[in-house]
Amino acid sequence: MNGHGQSDRFVVPANPPDKAAAAEAGEERERAKGNTAGETRPGRSAGTDVSSGLDRVREVARRDKGARFTALLHHVTADRLCWAYLALSPKAAPGAGGMWWEDYGKDLRANLRDLHERVQGGRYRALPSRRTYIPKADGRLRPPGIAALEDKIVQRAVVEVLSAIYETDFQGFSYGFRPGRGQHDALDALTVGIERKKVNWVLDADIRDFFTSVDRGWLEKFPRHRIADERVLRLVGKWLAAGVMEDGVWSEGAGTPQGASASPLLANVYLHYVLDLWVAWWRQHEARGDVVIVRFADDFVAGFQHLGDARQFLRDLRKRFAEYGLELHPDKTRLIEFGRFAARNRAARGLGKPETFAFPGFTHRCGTTRRGRFQVKRVTIAKRLRAALSRVKEQLRKRMHQPIPVQGRWLASVVSGHMAYYAVPGNYRAIAAFRDQVTRHWYKALRRRSQRTTVTWERMNRFQDRWLPRARITHPCPDARFAARTQGRSPVR
Image 1: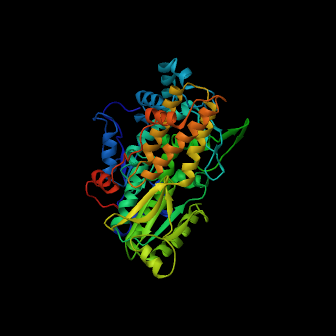
Image 2 (image 1 turned 90 degrees about the horizontal axis):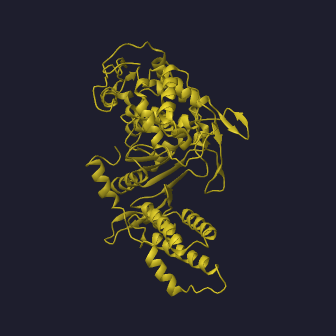
Image 3 (image 1 turned 90 degrees about the vertical axis):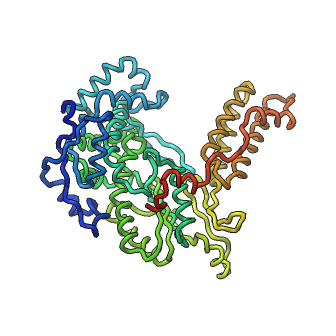
């Protein structure tokens, strides 16, 4: 373990690619083999003479896109493990090890010291994830795995270190599971891109069973373009090979483990090389018109000026995905006419209104402002609204006999949480309808408490005004927030 001032003493700068191949750097099969098999040569210093110990790593990664870091594990300090432990939810279910957060914290210093020594000494072993099933909106079951507590701690700490490198590499249109780039940032970027650029066609894409379809061979190769510390790479390999436990039976599992702390970063790294760099290259070399794209995790939407570009992109994308074990979902992937001229063009052909598409929680529609200017309208997805109300109804039955103030405080948190996400400009009717329907379910639940109920609608309206926050728009306009965040940079940067 390196001493103070010797952090990342050896950083290997690879030969920078020529301009024509810049977007493909590090993603071709031959290039990957050459990069990972090449000799490691000493490079510039990336010491820890800075406050966080990772600032220098971040700076070198930003300055030299070909640098490979050979000394990273010592950044996984006991303090970083402690912060990773404190960031975990105390109420989270235990994994295969059966260790609860609170029990581990009873002798936290000794436990973390032992864990740190095992990680640094190569004696750390990853446990299998415990398989659980969560229902999805379409009726299917999502099979995430619950990692053991110590695996969560180590993964969080390592992800923090690796993010210092990859956050300088990821494309601007990549959102999801990244610091400061959440769902509303992606929604703003997509709205601004479609409204400002010449978009007439939209590809609404969905990768089929992405997390279980990831090719582990490629997933182990891609990090080697930037990481030359074999100890860190072995940790990643241990997490991928740990497998899952279901009903006491171990299985190898497939892809990257859903639910693991490292899974989002590994997924973003995989799609960075398979999709993002390729899209950046394709847009620059193949497109004839404007192209915008926004990716949030494994869902992405692309807008095109020309139909020919959209069709060619879709054909090329299918071929590209096939090389890396991925596939577009045939039912959820659609190419639709969408944009400022979509309504007029479809009316001239005798067709109906432009089709809509869904992107994190919202249905996107073609609309206009009061002055007649084209505008992307965003409303709550009907399925999501019905599902949320169904959960409220179910919970109210369980809480039926609780005191009204207790129920009111809980419902207030539900309505506030709903509005915190869905209260975007143009979606007032949907959030107001959600509040009204919650009140209606509450009214029915209270009347079921007794045959001699005294709950009337007049009294119920007082409960609503007393406990439920009023419907109001809490998010700014997409272009205003996007401009503030990007400070004038391109919406499709």
